[in-house]
Length: 534
Image (tube, rainbow, N blue to C red):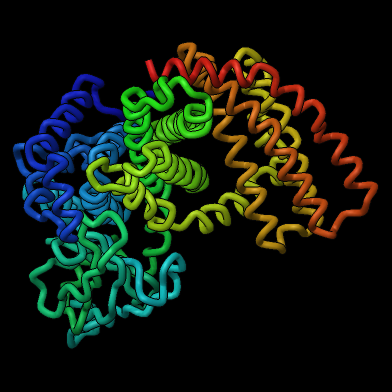
């Protein structure tokens, strides 16, 4: 099946345009000052949507004057943008996110009206869903859309009232996609900035991503034409918001990867400049094997899984919400951890603004929160992936095991063993009612995430260079140990299984075999350390 992607040369031109734009318009000294003064450079945001740059055109379909890029193209753009600055990258994410309800829910005529304007006029868009009392639970909406009818009872307009919270681009947007509770259910509406009654509210003073604007959006008797509804009827808003999650959460996963890589690259560079006791830091295992190598491995796994999901999205229009959640959970946690390690890697300098890693850490911290917290992702993964595997009678994870069992050179056989154990344990947890305990769902989700990312990295490593192969083996060995350990701890601690069942599960988990699988890991870590610091 043909993938929906830009020509590789065109993509490289776009990425080159982004780098040139960043060097010219937002060098580090400027970004550092904007961060210090908590200023969103709105003029820079508008410039990146201008005719000369046009970064937003990547995610707008070609038939509406965009470039028609796919998930892979948006991932690459998002990752490279995050490596430069996550604050300004968030403004771009908000434009894409705000456009998504139009992309998935509008008729062709509506898309022609709105998306061509976004493409040609470079409109800044904001996604208005979150509310003070409705964060991840979008069904708990307070914003209302009241019908206004003519004498014949036909709906001609809607009147919106409510407050939206934590809205990226909230104070600088030209166009808003607002989710409100209509008579027929939650519904998206397109609202222009100039509409009377719409105004920015409180602007948030944030810990990180201070170069992005985050504010309330207040709607007081905002009257809009009925034609501004997204789609043809009320009540489609929740369905439309769910349809975009696989795509937008992949973008945030790419941010996690980009932020983590930016931090890791700075830590590697510092290790080759700084000497302690006569040798460079990059020559010390205590530095490389704690602060560089583990994060290099997890970021490689994150990249492999993101690219796998992008391929799924680009080859099908099917919902990939679970995969989006796995990608976001793993990549954002990995990026956040890499940024934390980069501060430690710089010692006291890491705490100082001039080395930038403290800013990267403050910026990456939000990634495990916005677009659904890590805990929300764990709940989605644990509940829905379990149902999928149970419905398939173990077929989902056994199928993953079959894909990598023969890839012994990159540790695929170890991952396959962990996947088969996970398959059996998800079925046991389902029938044993362990899913009634949220902690159990969360722990299963972590095991699922580890297995699925390991499968992706093994498959990528089998086709990759020696560095990627070594990274795949290290992650496979870790998953071979962590998954059975996590599952045994969960089942033993649940109180729902007797000693005989725990003993049987312990035998299947084969921790002795998992320990034996660690052979050669230190040599692989030594190799990775040499390669990434060359």
